[in-house]
Amino acid sequence: MDANLDALALLGLAVSSFVLLTGCANMVLMAALWVLYMSLVSVGQVWYSFGSAQECSLATQRRQNQEFLDIHSRDNADLATGLSCEAAVQRSAGGEGCVCRPPRTHGSTHDWPAAPVRLEDHSDGSRELRSPTQPRRAAVPPTLIWTPERSELSAVRWDPTSGKAQGWESQLLETGFLGVFLCPLWTLSRLPSGTPPSQIVLWGFRWLIFRIMLGAGLIKIRGDQCWRDLTCMDFHYETQPVPNPAAYFLHQSPWWAHRFETLSNHFLELVVPFFVFLGRRLCILHGALQILFQVVLVISGNLSFLNWLTMVPSIACFDDAALGFLFPSGPGGLKDQVLKMQEEAPRGARPSLRFGCVARRAVHVALGVLVAWLSVPVVLNLLSPTQVMNTSFNSLRIVNTYGAFGSITKERTEVILQGTASPNASAPDAVWEDYEFKCKPGDPGRRPCLISPYHHRLDWLMWFAAFQTYEHNEWIIHLAGKLLANDRGALALLAFNPFEDRAPPRWVRGEHYRYKFSRLGGQHAAAGRWWVRKRIGPYFPPVSLRDLEGYFRSRGWPLPELE
Image 1 (cartoon, one colour):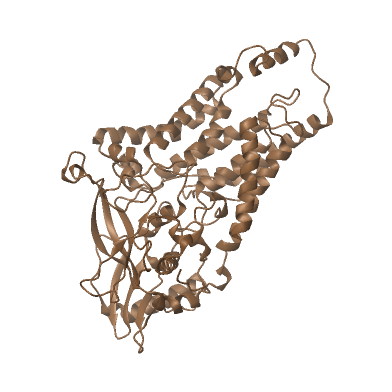
Image 2 (tube, helix red, strand yellow):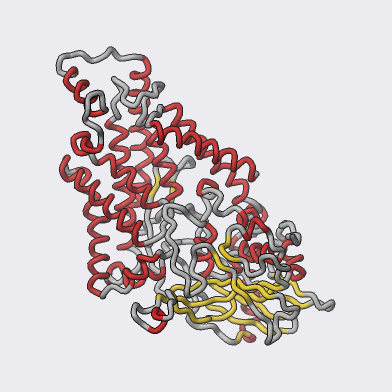
């Protein structure tokens, strides 16, 4: 399956590179590119639907977990404070375990069931990670661990917190679909006569940017109280998924600057979108403001290719007169060719309509009707007080609803994976060494990365995992198993392996830390630290390959082999 994904991705890269470098495209070529994209999505679904038919119903699982909680509630102790879930360590003859209820996060409406998991000791001295509901197969397959950043195209329908797609993936599908209809039917000419861009398609892009921005603004106003209090930007730069260096300095801005940022955000997302319907000048102003807004977001954070992608429909707000300065004006240039075509039009020198032109116009009319029909539930969602974001109401994701940061986390927590070569994980002299990811915060002295528009999916998933529990992110236990075997594929996703050129660790654990930016000019900043961190407690207990045998077997995962 990896080879299939690689082949599809390389073929798509070749086609898109041809279009980009030559400036030539037609509907056939662009449709083939979009089908390739959808094929990657379909291949990804084989992974992300793995085991879903084996899962218990949510109602049954909630009842089982409630029974478990009732039985053990009197034994709970050491209630952790400052965490994003209520966690209690359970001590009994069978070993230790943790029961957690994760919060609802970032606009998610999914009510997670509790999933208690225990580390049980056996008479032969071995230990096994188990839950009362085993055997159960995970909704997220093991393949995720070594291919999370292979392609954005393989996880459109999957989200670690709510089972929903990340917004930019559906947005890329919709943008690519509209892009198919910008081109002539057959010819690869850069300026084909008789086939100008359709107004229906241009308004399709304007309708897209309107929904993106208004959806993002409405979900904020209806979501976290801090958006209404104008305090969200006090936290955003520090707690966003993957901060960049500029976010460190922007976080240090005075309070009034953060209030202005929040007000500006509301203006750009709730007021400016309507400019697209108010005539040529305001439409151009809308496009300019939205592109400028996206540039600011690129500078202030690593949000994958989302901001770059959002600039694309904004270009449809400009006409030829506004964009003419971008093209050469010499004899024979594109601008000169356009002027000649415009001079010939009043003289009635238009070429006769060919079959391709007629077919193209018919397709555009059908497209307009389709987009209007599919927009009905999207508009109803925008008007609803129970608005949901990043959702599609059709299987092809042609017209979607969007939104971002409906709620803001007020503190940053991170999961730090550690390994030790000590034979006894509980020994006081056991030396635990940190694994470093490519972009997410880890070593407080490491500068935040700058990767946009690239995307390290595993780092992004670790951000979600940090304010949930490992019971709801079973893939992180699979990753721990891979690290215990020094698996090359998994280690390729990390920036630093403390056991490189050494025997693999005997134990791996997850530690939970709270991170804050160091104060500019303060003691920690003077010592070269970008972050200040404080340990909260264990995220998951030390595990060895032997401990994970039963856990992997119950989920149908192959046990990692030592390399």
